[in-house]
Image (cartoon, rainbow, N blue to C red; front, side):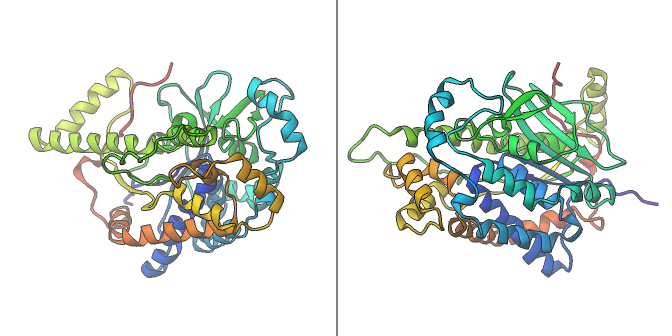
Length: 417
């Protein structure tokens, strides 16, 4: 019997409320595109960071019926109201000194009360269904990335199926840890520093995995992915922005928004570029030196004690519009669903007057109306790349002929100590 070694990984980025965009892309792939091809495309590996971890866990629990699951996830996001996700009251005001100086209760504090979010995550994700999906073969592995507060290292929590095993090599400053993934892992991965409190797991505190690994491509590769579908949450910028006629000193909220962009959004392009260059190097090597090039290189990698190399097909979809600008427009419109008091406090916290952007607000606007806009944008962007989507999943199907350079394994050496 022929064993097909192709593994498709769906890699979901972090970015707070921006996560509605990736739900839109997933909606196109698992619903619209699935209807055209007669079935939802297979996903073998799900890797998520920050809000992408929450979306990945939800999807993992519904892979037995992915099309219906993604429709439910769309309904969940579009039904959100601010007060159902975040809280900000007298307790948070009194806790602000501890947010800045540290200390206090082991569970930590943040600018916002995330107990409503925790209740939402525990209630809406069928956590027992994740193990069932892995056991029944609908999924081979799920990974969630978080940052260990004490050391600053990335910890990748992985749960695999009965025939799976944990990778033996990890990226630099990274630990791979087997886990029965549950609400604490997803919430820890999504705990944006300062805004949300760190989450305790096994006696250690964890915060947003996007601090060091926002788009978790490396875990997907360690788990054997031959095809990587990555969704980013920042628009590509071309050229240099013009200098405004009147330059003003930016406010703290504006600067914090830009800092979060740098921490949480800007890693994926580098990862994709590195992967593309490695693919090109393998192709060029085989063209220049023949079919024996890759086996010879992998023999040296084996002697060195590092994983082998392989060609990995990639598809990367990112927003065609600036989500920070969309957030500013939405805040100014005043069309926030419910939570009038919270909305006013949120507007007091975030500055939407800088260059028409509201990057900080874009992380916090867990508002169904805003989520719908991002979902529609994600669907439209995926639809615009429909030929790429069809080619990607076509090459990932069992009927597609494998590329000669798809033997071996690709990784980012060296392993951690």
